Amino acid sequence: MSFVFEEIDFQQTPLGAISLRRRSEPRLNNQVLYEVKLNEEFLMSSLFTEAEIQLSKICLSALEGSDWDVVVGGLGLGYTAVAALEFENLKSLQVVDVMEPVISWHQQGLVPLGDTLNKDDRCQLIHADFFDVATNAKLDFNGQAVDPDGEMKKVHAILLDIDHSPSYWLNPGNCIFYTEQGLKDMSKKLHAGGIFGLWSDEPPAEDFMALLEGIFDSCESHVVTFPNPYTGGESTNTVYLARKA
Image (cartoon, rainbow, N blue to C red; front, side, top):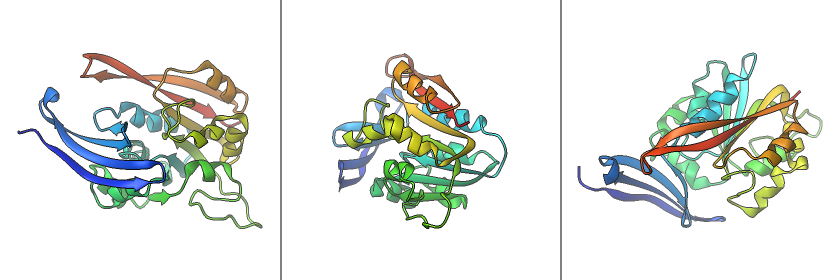
């Protein structure tokens, strides 16, 4: 197989230029990789997906009951969402992403997992700012205004994979979410016993764990290890799990 590089899509967004690329990696026997870049920063590669998958597996395995309504903040290449759909107890999955091009890639089948998400009736891809809808009592996760006389629609789990870590954000404005008030507002949209899960590219942070412990009934961090063929060793990400009382 000869070397392949293809820029599948390139679009300007309010956060900058986002692109979807497909290439073969000669250092990995020409394995075909899909990559997402925002400006000059790599957001995701199909080579490193274990922690995104584990975000769903670890957090949803901790849920009790059935007929779960689950929200995923951040679509990316779809690995967290597809892992959530593997749970039979899941009733509905809303995947919220502020980047319209990312949603379009999946709807058009330009990325490998797009068809899986499109064909599952439980799954809905939503173009909205997750941080706005997660912390605003007047909005539901579709970004629509809540009936003033109705009750806030609660969900059983909220899984977040947007920023690099609680202290390293794609958009500086996201920092407001990772505060006591931001997390409290988000937690109001969880049922009792509900789960908040967060992916991070960095090791567990003691200050963030302390923040979660002050808001939720319990919290824990899981270090996810996966092989890194570029270094010949292993790399790690973190999955935070917090449970509402």
